[in-house]
Image (cartoon, rainbow, N blue to C red; front, side, top):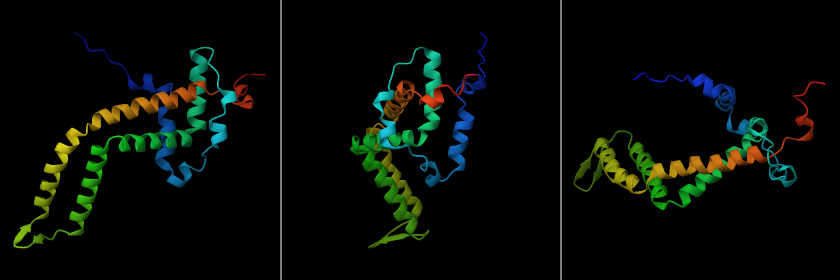
Length: 176
């Protein structure tokens, strides 16, 4: 049976993903959020309307993803915080690993002495992972990640598809 070869360029060229993510990689956090749009503009219910067809929805998504990109990043961060707060096992595991690695790093390669016992850094890392990995498996991080992808996709793409372009932008692509 022959394998089907689908070039990735065909799938990603219509969404212009390479150029869209290039600006994220090159800028700082302050520059990233410098074009944060006001909440009144982001939630402008007067501009909400159903797109006429798929081409109109695609045009709106392409425009709004660039125009509201910082607002969508904030929405994604808020969904991440909600996901962590609603999964206390995962939150505990992330904090446990971060604090454990920080404290082991503070030893700067020296052994930890507790009473008569000496623990090397490799023993401490092993103990940390022996505790953290089962907790991570119990906390279902893959389910949380899949929920985060789905929820942010529905919220962000839904907003981008239903939010109409401003009047001055709606006619910019047409020839006079």
